[in-house]
Image 1: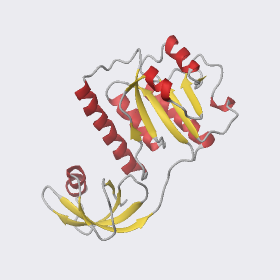
Image 2: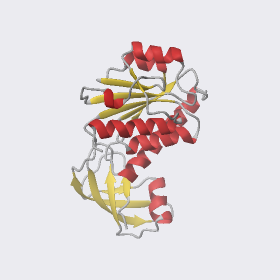
Image 3: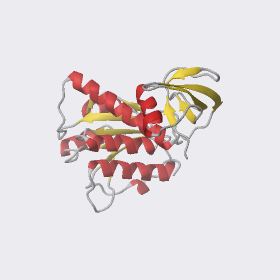
Image 4: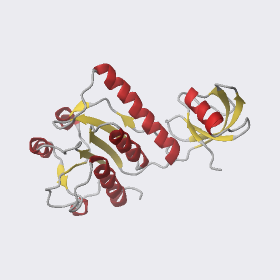
Length: 242
């Protein structure tokens, strides 16, 4: 059986006994039905990971004993920021989950002209917490020890004005070429993906004025959640670790 990986925020030290979160305790003891003494892996998002064992198992709680530290990392040499046009419901969750698995270091949810999600500040905060939880769960599954930053949603123009990554790309079905046509070797890259319905002509021109290059992903029109992960996979295959 694969050893479960659990995100445990805060300081970790060998020999310490830590109380696991309610969600982690429920997953380990009620879903996986692991007994005291079962092997775990703990990480806090700051790099590296610890071996651990379940220490005490209660009805609604669990503790773990922290073991040896390992500096193991699986981060890509290409630091990618995904600027994702906010999509509805599970499509946005899927985009963040798969982007995390594909190694992005940051996700910026951007509010665009065709974005159909309009929320109050309070609901945006709850949505942000939900998206961060999606990224954490993806890190637990895929073996990453560093959690990508999920930024607070920004207006597209605000993001364009502050982005300074080496390579800036945006998906444009009308673009003349793809990623293969790019000659340089970047260490940082931004990928801008529109929401359902894509980016408007004005938004595409604004992105170009901000230094973004338009790229296309072949003759077929992909959904927003498919287009982003496809482009990320190509970027990682070209300059990353795929």
